[in-house]
Length: 170
Image 1 (cartoon, rainbow, N blue to C red):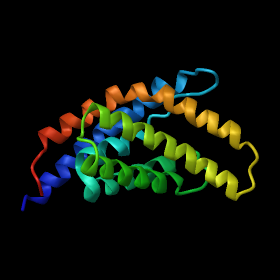
Image 2: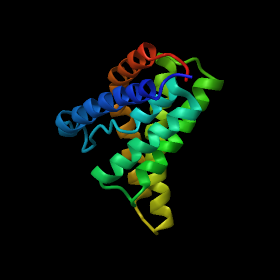
Image 3: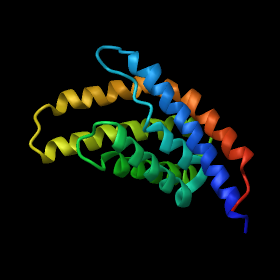
Image 4: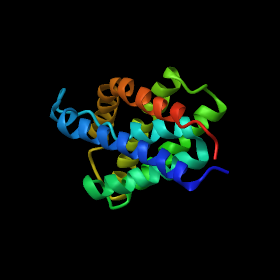
């Protein structure tokens, strides 16, 4: 069993990397618009962490990221990002543990899945609350996914370095 300080160090490094990616979203990506849609990097973060860290640790990190996003970003309801990011992490870990070896292809699949899951959950909330613009929301979710996927090229190598540098089981 490794000391708790190692575990704290590893997840602190993940948190600092995520903070850097939050800054990238806020300072750069939020100013890019293609056909009225802005890239949305946040759902890729729990997908990346869970792809490398698995189904036990990934969802916990995703939950923490979701709580931070719920505090910082508007969502359909309070707790939306915590729920959606945890589901993204479970999906990503399942894909990496059972179907596709963690790597670039897996990264693209779990990124797309995470982005589409977030859009799909927004649509579900609209359906449950009597919303009308489902076609528009679906188109926006697809455009957002296609526009944001290239950002996986930044996120996954960063998280892979952290995972490899801190790759001792605990």
